[in-house]
Length: 395
Ligand SMILES: Cc1ncc(COP(=O)(O)O)c(C=O)c1O
Image 1: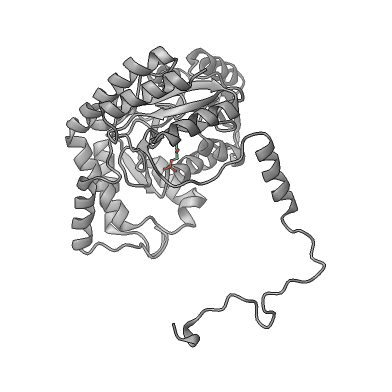
Image 2: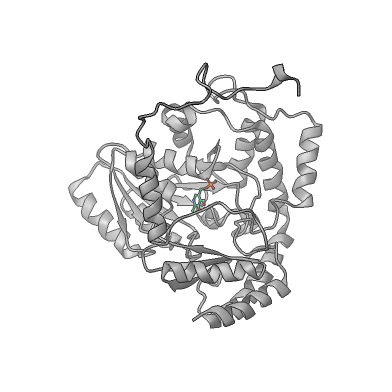
């Protein structure tokens, strides 16, 4: 490279030297990292390797020939890669509009809005929609993205015992008595990300009806996998005026982004009030088109769900006798203590099986676990090998 093409990163005229007396500017961050190491909760980024027992790529699409073919076709058709601006300015592309129209039809909602991630969608929903004088009741195991929305909401909020419909009703009944006009918002996941079990959606919808509440269902781990055509577990509640569903596109769909499916007033309100939507570059139109075509493909490809279901059945048969819970495509195996959890996960990784240990604060203290994810990326032999190794490694 010619000298004049080299890019200097040294501050002008300083040759990179720092003032002699500067204190350690990051002392508190270093101390916190040391604390995390001390309590066995330090995290590092490691490259992917080994058989996939940890991704959310349940249908095995993320690196598939099918999605590569769809993506190549989109590139060849000249769809732009970047949106160039926020949706409210120059970034609103025909691909976003077409995807949202299709998603509303596919998920049978009055409208849909595409956001850059499930995290952005959940935090925007809970930060923006509930108003002063409202009450939000969430399951205690709700995802961090919803907690982020709760941090800034102007509404009152509380969490209740996991999957306990009566606990939701108790809060709704008591609160409604003193607040005849406020709105109640109920927040749940259709399939819980770290436990793999499902919310009692029919009971919660009935509670929502009784107390004029709105039920918000995060379908992150069900979209593509469960429900007719992979429409998720909220498919049974489609077209209700008191249900909002969030379908993330980076898990079983193998893409990225999220679709909020809701009555039209809700998406209209988000477009006008959700700061993360308004003040952010629109998602790539290429990705919007990819999500659109992938949804079409996943909807008509029941064989993907059938093949996954066969793996899930085998995993249940082999892993439940070892103490695994769930019976679905997310299989938690509670170990308890953090270091022991990570040691077992490490031994499985050394043996070529990518199983990850999950520790607090992602899960409650004392419930460190192996979160075994069952996908189409593994076969019967891989699942049998996992069961064999676990039988040796578990205390
Ligand atoms: C239940 C749940 N909701 C939302 C999200 C966030 O979705 P995304 O990965 O698209 O940001 C996740 C991600 O792990 C999740 O598990």
